[in-house]
Length: 91
Image 1 (spheres, rainbow, N blue to C red):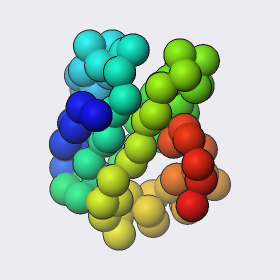
Image 2: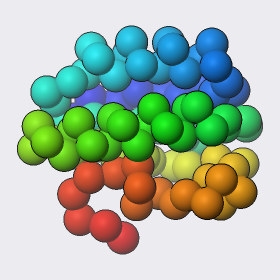
Image 3: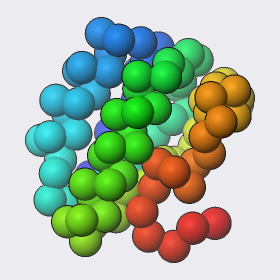
């Protein structure tokens, strides 16, 4: 499984960089490490939901590991949760 640490701030600029990184990982199982995320914007959440859908179609696993408290709080504020960003068995 490929691991990708997420940046501390996932704003518009970081989201476009994340999209490029995700394209490089497409077709493989991937884990996105959210331990360092301090700010998470709506555009980044949309990109992660889109990635989940693509990984699901490809039959691959996409996981968010070590989500920071700020990551989880931002998801909640946007009406989302980790299950919306991951494939495979849900916890």
